[in-house]
Length: 209
Image 1 (cartoon, rainbow, N blue to C red):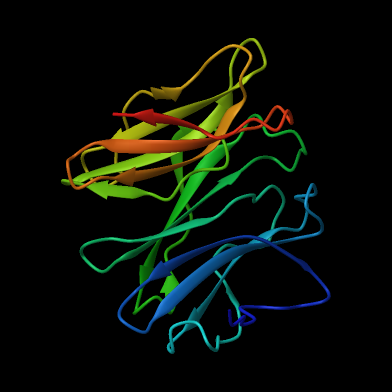
Image 2: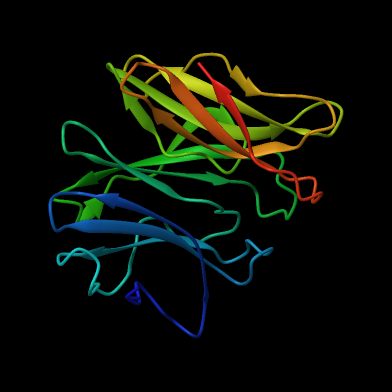
């Protein structure tokens, strides 16, 4: 197995990378700059790109403004060729509540991005935006009233201008279901694979729509 450095900066912590294929040889990778794994002060969403299928990478550049509370970026390439980056953000507190999602649209062949657009979607650690038959789907997690984590999903029929009420993907007392990754099968079903985060060593869970 060959290994290649995507980005390294010994002066800042790099975290939570996500990758998308823009064309045959062009890859884009977003990640978070922050102080440490559990610290979100002075954080920033960054992007880098490769034109040789990941063997070498250009210097990183910012997507977001630097600030407090940026957490977990994700990147998607739409059927139109547009690049969408999403990330959750809070007010800088360490707890993962009172957070909302933000979205950027790539312009000028992803050389520049729009200003951050705040979405009416509370929660944190989103999955990639999923484009499906004209719909946009975003899954993320939130705390239940009893303190357990549950996985939710929001749907937009107008390219992100408005969003549905939350749809429950996975929720059960006693389980901390989080960090979903949703795939669309050729047969039409959606499968959400979810981490169980009670630190009990349980296997991942899945939910099918």
